[in-house]
Image (tube, rainbow, N blue to C red; front, side, top):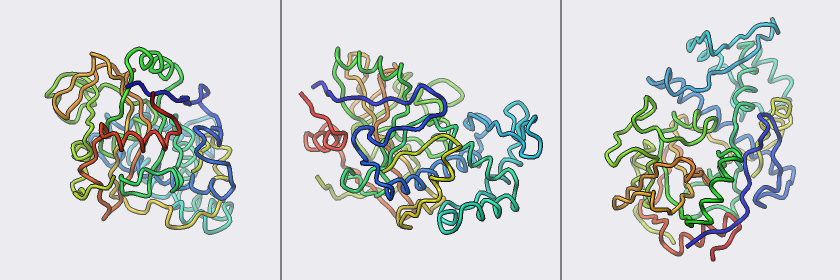
Length: 334
């Protein structure tokens, strides 16, 4: 059954501000902008996970390009001269977003500069290098069956890919499926897109069913690849992040409620993707393999902190689940 709705796309400019009204999720109220701080927390956590990974030389991509605050003609962080140890020190010195929002930003920036003069420039890079559109879903637009308050719309495909995806969807239709990947991989995914990593140095798990992007309509299978081990067995049928460094001060000065922040360093993530249902989509029971990367686009992103559990029994092919997904997206099926 084809799915139709208006697709937003990642801005064609590398540095841009996304509209508050994308997908009609947010109205633009000032207090809602504050939830962008949770997205900043998430971006920093992903950076931490990638940098602390034993595979960092492969998955920490891109490596920061940060101008030296004391010498604007040179790079303090240079992809051609990588220093993971120096990068780790700067990352560890980034004041938590929770603390940043609890006082005057200028003063807290000064404190951060005292800890490490590269901490704040690195924070700006983490935000500005994000090429994906991440929107925190307000509670009224969340998928309740996912059992987490940390829910986001995630659009990581550039406009050209979205256009190709729409063309393929008109021909073949589409459906939804989960994609699980450890949090250490998302630093790269948000900046490079979801790619076919089979038989490449990026592959972490085996490719038992061939080359392609691995998906599943069953939540428990994808949770297994996210690094998450606990799942909930019982079945139960907000803002826009500005990705220019210039708007980071405004974004972080907002005063969100503390419950919105991601506090744990132990986070598990799973994405809900839209996938083209052409003959190229290979289904091996509940394990699906899509060999064409243009036929998979991320739509939602869910984060679980310590102690949170997901529902193991979600099936995206259940009519009730599909209806709820489309309600949140704001579209309709025909």
